[in-house]
Amino acid sequence: MNNPIETEIINCEARLRQAMLRSDVEVLDELLAPELIFTNHLGQLFTKKDDLEAHRAGIIKIESITPLEQTIRIVGDVAMPKATTCGIALVKVNILGSIANVRWDANFRFTRIWASTNSGKWQIVVAHSTIVA
Image (tube, rainbow, N blue to C red; front, top):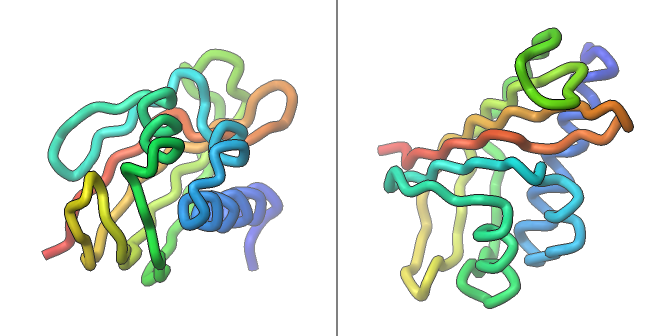
């Protein structure tokens, strides 16, 4: 059975998947921290602004995200501004879609650090992805 914090992060991960599928920039804006740093599978760094703009411009088009594995780890206070608790989401998904007109049908592993702010909102502060061979 999941503890309440794990359940919150699991729910945030589900919201994130749905927002990515719909390129719902409003929900993505809520879920991504202003200081977000995302390292993609090519080693490129992206900010929150970069990610939101890619969805707005239609550069990212996701047709499906199929969850394959998910593990949530809760950690105590860490050196994050305004963070009270952090959780690490380790997920493996299959993504079908395109990025900059390059077609994808691949399995990816994501590591995402979710931080709870003083206002109780959960946001991703750091993320990393890799393609699973």
